[in-house]
Length: 129
Length: 268
Image (cartoon, rainbow over the protein chains, first blue to last red):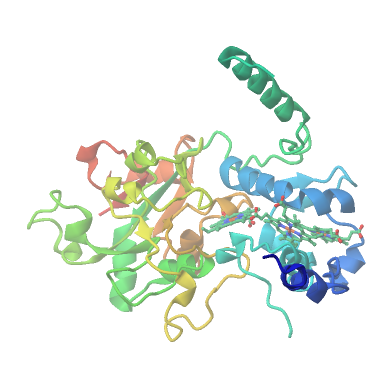
């Protein structure tokens, strides 16, 4: 009635098929993104806030900036990092330093499969190819 | 575990309260972090504009002039879509008869009959568009400017239906897909955003320039060609330029019977 070998072979083939994506991708883990600083950012040395803060909270910071600028008409931001005053603008401040959007912002966002809709309206810096 | 409905609701309540308190998702900027430099240019003011049409018409009779329109639309990345059905406009020309329907009659000064008047958002004291906006994407600032927050606009177009002056335009398509022959260098201003498909736009009285102590783009353009037909200033200051002009010259506003109380005045 039961043919043990056939079942076993079937199981092995089935299992191999099921696990094939894991073998296929083995050793090819996508590298953690390495955002590249533009010459201008390198020269500035620091961001508008601490690096760790920026890495984890830049979306909240941007959200706050757009709210205060557009709704409250407050346009300058004093950084608690060094008391420097920044004009709160995505295009004129962030992208002035991070003018290499494709190698900076996008390198991370692509890794996370993220496409911020900001660029539907905000103009991306022109990059030399 | 045996939970009755009451206990279940209590547990959920406590859990969600803890979730909020413990969550980092609610971390915003600390108080005082944004106090930096609060701009005072607009504090306590009521911005208004006077349009001196005799000066504008005189200039136009010499040669067609649209410096104010070009300047505004260049600075704010407003494309020319070459189709009146979908056109985008912040400041534009309207025939005298359509600017003041009901007010004009055949015996008014012939000099204005059939002439192009400059029209823009009236930044009404009682803006009907603000009343109908379901998301507060358009609202009235303390300085009287009827502002747009494009981040909140959902494109419902109630404001367009409410505005009696047709001062609002809708983006039926992606403005960046404007005809390149009419818009060779779009976006024209790399420092200002465009809009996207599905949002409404209109004149804002240039808060980004006012914040720097500058006049709106159209006013600057008209001053540059020394016509000075656009006069801008603070309505709440009796000595301001607009108040002086309003005192000396007789002015009218568009559709006063509606009670919107426009802050754009016309010398006829």
